[in-house]
Length: 229
Ligand SMILES: O=C(O)COP(=O)(O)O
Ligand SMILES: [Mg+2]
Image 1: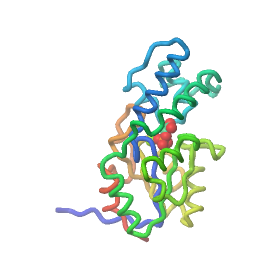
Image 2: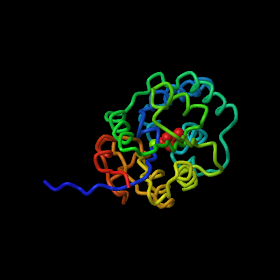
Image 3: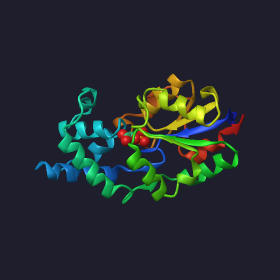
Image 4: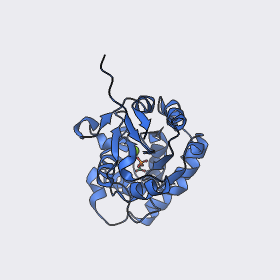
């Protein structure tokens, strides 16, 4: 059997929604509650799954319009809708959230390689930090960059470059692992190595179409392909 040569890196960054944690049921609960507040009908879980990835304001715009392209409009969503979503998501956050298979095992394996680890998410910090605490993953990470703490979120490379510096590594020595086209573009633009998982959201599209360094079925598999530079 051919064994792929290991990728030598100095730090690893992980996307959150769709890579570490399956959050779609909590996001769906908050979206339905917001639609209820606005006197509008509920939305299927499958729609929410494809709308996740560009942060909460864009998720709210997509839910209200029933369309992916609503996120391309730079205008913010109506304040009443955004406030309602954030209120309900604060209650729902973590309720149905579960780790994807192989996540804890993979993080332990990366940790035992002596690699510093970080999270790069487009989820707002008010939700990402409590969620990581709630599912018990917070202690794994030396840095968490959420979608609202820097001027430009993924797919801009800024959060990856910033986090690499915090972890003492050049972006060229960092591996980004995500589930979506935004992780892919951010990783490539930062000059990082990029692995993608096929089980996440990716706005309803196949990750196979993206020219990443590897598609890995779990984070445990990802860790088996990596060594410390
Ligand atoms: O909140 C989102 O839209 C997606 O978050 P992610 O960057 O962790 O996938
Ligand atoms: Mg994601």
